[in-house]
Length: 67
Length: 230
Image (cartoon, rainbow over all chains, first blue to last red; front, side, top):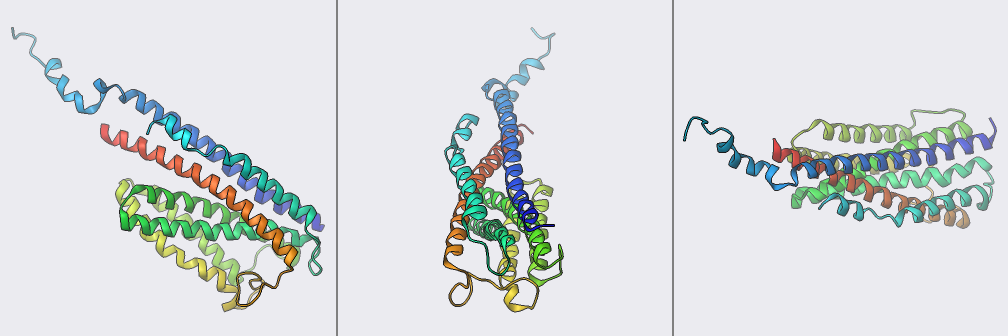
């Protein structure tokens, strides 16, 4: 193999590695942002937050026979 | 902090600067720097191999500092810094090993040798891969941060061992030419190009680190939301 082949291979490894990592980071970042957005929108409504769920329990579990 | 705020924190403007700097690195290394008298053109691999190695050192140093800061202050942002930098350090160590193997094949005639520098670098790679594996295996967030911080400090001991291995033991790898007792043994023009390349790679490192920390912050926030629900 010629010197130029080795040089191109080494630069390809370095730049390719950095590029692949940057792309993977951007994709993971978008995925995490989407996931976080979905979680936040699900629980952002204070009525659906876990802290207020016990307050609804008496209504749902109330005895329908009682006056 | 909501998602929009998290996205705003990503330093968008740093990306084109870092890309331009690395492009300049390639141009300087391939076309501007003179051909080495002894090794010939293949020495141009140095302009990407050495900055990668230095960035690996820097990344693991940041991991060590972040780990120590976490143990001192018990704030998760330091743990996020340590974990993010360790991943980048692993990336740069892998790149260093692979580009070094190509350079080794061209100059020594072999892809790999159990030379002290190569062996200690391989150990460094395995140790930090273990650090990241350990992190992924610990579910409790605080326990993960605490144990990782201890490992992040202890693992850094290997970095000076890697650097000085070429002085302490005989091997194929050349001794240090810049960070060494006495003056650098490299030509000043080659050194200038190399230092510009190190600066470019450092910019890219800063950009990637910032993005990686933001990713970790979003994961933490998602974990804390789900933790509230469970």
